[in-house]
Image (cartoon, rainbow, N blue to C red; front, side, top):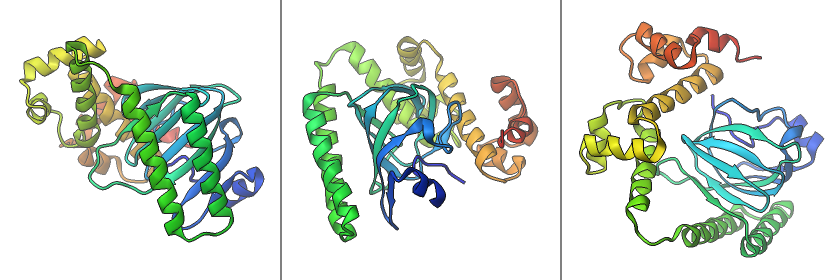
Length: 279
């Protein structure tokens, strides 16, 4: 059903000799994206695991949970499970290391991007080398679990230090926008009512709508609609569920209503989009 960055077949593992997998963890020593067949531009993917990623070379542009991210050499990131990711472009030399982390229950989908510094490079190289060595030597999962947990905490600490800023009205509005997008990622399948998101953020619907428009240049409902569309595309591409069932799961009373909604935004019908999934 879901695609993830390290979901590959054994033949590709042998060909690239860049992956190590066991029942719990997946790890890439050096994954050149241009050489893969399972990661493609312009297609939304649903993460069903959490990964820590280090960019070794090249650059890539992503839309993750409706937000834009630029990944550049030396950057670190944590992308959580249930995130919706779409790579919009990348350079031919774009290469990463990635390791799966223990999932966190009840957490809204998120991406934490830490920009490259000498400190991040030294820390990341040390942890990735230790994890790689532990996997090669067949250490017990508990050892690897402790190493990846420590890596997560190091990245979180670096992220907090990079985003620490003096409180201003603009920063507060950006924070509202970020929290709004997290809620949309969680609830857009069931909730497309402005009042729902305003209540969750302890704001009036009018004030929230104004903040979202001022920060992003787009309406609040634009972000809700795009979240629903991404979830619809994933269901249409990676499952064989009837379109009527997908419509129901996304909160539409009728398939025809869902079809009109999907076509209004994508200029194609759900069935036509599904027919292209093998392209």
